[in-house]
Length: 250
Image (cartoon, rainbow, N blue to C red; front, side):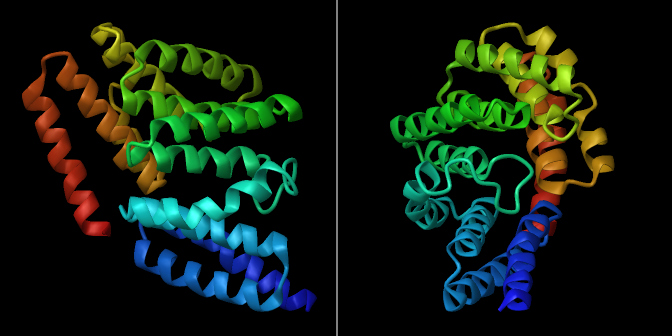
């Protein structure tokens, strides 16, 4: 049973890697198999991991409603039984996965639910006191507010998170936090400062190797900021390059 659990755990973890490097179909196939295997083994921790990553694979595949529906059953266990657990995640799992749910709800326009779940993730991060928990949960809540157009709130969260990133040398969430800061600046009318924050993000994102986060999300933010600065032709050209990558990877 121990070997089987490790194998299923590895498969569930690999889903996270697969969708970030653009292998979306493989992520969905592996995710479905991992959930089925975890159910057969009856291990609650591994099943939670498999379901969380499978839900997020649907999110990055653009199937937002299915991502939301598959993520909803996770919420209660993340709030209670596994509130402070780490299950195959760098940060506390509830901070990341409730943050993911916040993002999914926001993407389909369920902003009240998104904010409620996102604030719970931030509350757990305050309980653990871990910098990576604070940044990841805060970034998802800021992303929700960015989608809703709450620029001042985005700025407040992003500025706080940038300070945490700098103090603790958290390189993984640095680009995402900077993008959120730039989106907040653009939304509140400070377009020039926003442009300075994201200049060259597309080129850096392509080199970074994290396809979804770097060369799609970050480049899209750069294009948005260029548009807000009145550089519509440059924004359109960058959007076309991003769309080509989206089409290439599905």
